[in-house]
Length: 375
Ligand SMILES: NCc1[nH]cc(CCC(=O)O)c1CC(=O)O
Ligand SMILES: [Zn+2]
Ligand SMILES: [Zn+2]
Image 1 (cartoon, rainbow, N blue to C red):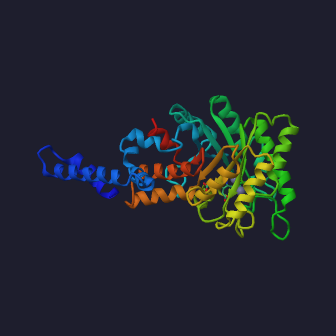
Image 2 (tube, rainbow, N blue to C red; image 1 turned 90 degrees about the horizontal axis):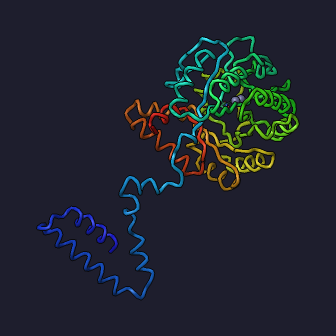
Image 3 (cartoon, rainbow, N blue to C red; image 1 turned 60 degrees about the horizontal axis):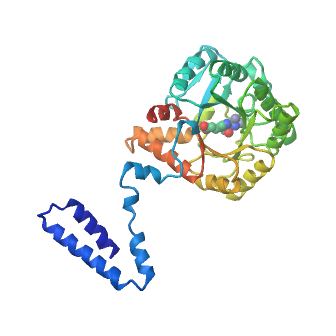
């Protein structure tokens, strides 16, 4: 019955007054009214009838927009920037369409054009190109004359309203390409790594970062960073965003191309989460909240929407971020190029899913596009 009611609605809309179909639809609505009356005693079928009518809620662009708990705004977006130690460099990253590695001289004019369009926040990744910048301890990660600390200072100076997040890890600076300091047997030395990584985070914070975001995944780094920020008296002005649920897998390939951070042996499966590990992700999220994370992040995003929802429920009182990673971005570009879908439509669809799952902050390589599309 509810189906015929739906059909009659369509018939009504399409019918001209002299059209015989209006007759049909009139009859159908008569039937409907009749069955309402005859089933009035059973509230179940009445409510069934009423709740079958959904289209009214989204037959207009405005009412469609009301259906989303969260609408994408420019303020939700964080844009990743790759900063090299070669000041005049601007090199396209082959596996990441439209993305470049930039030296400081190229970075500022580029960021200026984005700030004009409403860019609110960036996340910085250092890309040291000089081979001497890499050693077993990742010494150059907090080099005061290195690209990241210089970029923090320059961006703060040129764009006072830009919110600066800095990724904290050693893999871009270690000769072996792993995200910490290794023991002789090639496994991560957790205590040494955490000590070093928290020093690096502190250096970025002192240089002016608004937010430090450890992506190394060593156990206990959130607590260690928080304690050093407190000790330095800057915990009130530096937000700690943890890559809490960061899964291993093949979606970081283009990033490792861009950052030159591919491990020289082995992989990251001993410190990044296994893709099926929902329980581990939930434990990591709760652990990081307990250790003082101000924001928790889930990464990658589109294959891990359930984890974003878990984070939203487990960490009710803090914002949830999601990182749409390099491989996800590259896949959408490849799909669009192959004619599978329209790039803009798919970019919006992917972000809408991430917001619906529960994220309020999204890191994405699509940010320059969204700044145009949302204008
Ligand atoms: N620890 C470094 C780091 N920080 C962010 C990303 C991935 C970002 C992306 O793929 O876009 C990675 C790569 C990795 O862990 O291998
Ligand atoms: Zn990193
Ligand atoms: Zn790393």
